[in-house]
Length: 126
Length: 130
Image 1 (cartoon, rainbow over the protein chains, first blue to last red):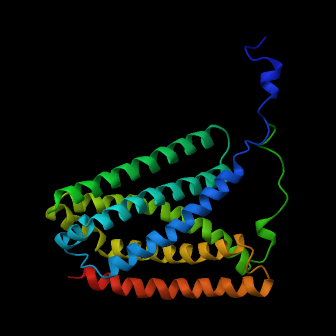
Image 2 (cartoon, rainbow over the protein chains, first blue to last red):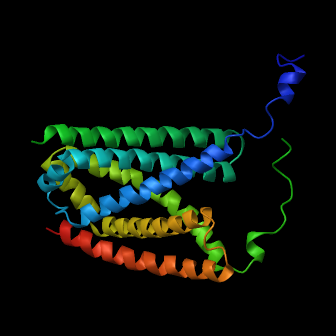
Image 3 (cartoon, chains in turn cyan, blue):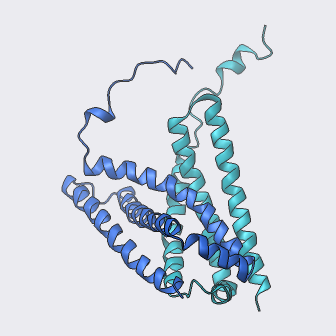
């Protein structure tokens, strides 16, 4: 005798149904990444990267602060849903569940840590 | 789920590597490698927020021999993933599906990634060397 009814055991074993939304999220974030990373690398090439004052001054400009926060968030999101697919493809059982949890949490943690650093620079300089 | 010990038909090892399949797996590998780069981005931003001494430490670490080598591979992986990602977006839009086009765009991505990474690296090194 199980706590779960035969109906509960049979339901929900098919496709989750969120595939198309995941597919679109990956593409839409990819388009955003093309724009944001182009901006960042073109800016970085023109910056005196060895000089913290210059880099902080650049990052503290409102437009750059906004774009850098968007870049960090979009990067983390694009990476999280990409790594998710890789883990789902190669891992099974509890290892998969653990891997997915660790990946999702780390992506969100790193995004938060990076965004707080950006805000500290934005509000600390000038 | 009766998965686990089911026999698998031979797949990867029986096929000769082709530009299509090799770039496909490279897109995945470069993506995972770039995901690890988020640690470096977060570290760099925090060093910048931490002041001149913290930033000098980070520049010392990232500017060391192994640091530079790792950064260059991250840049190379980025350039490849960037260009091949645009190739994928073109496919998603229904463009470039002819075999000759796929082979040509594949080589274009490979050569373009090497050239782009070289150009960006030269620009970044010039700014960081100060």
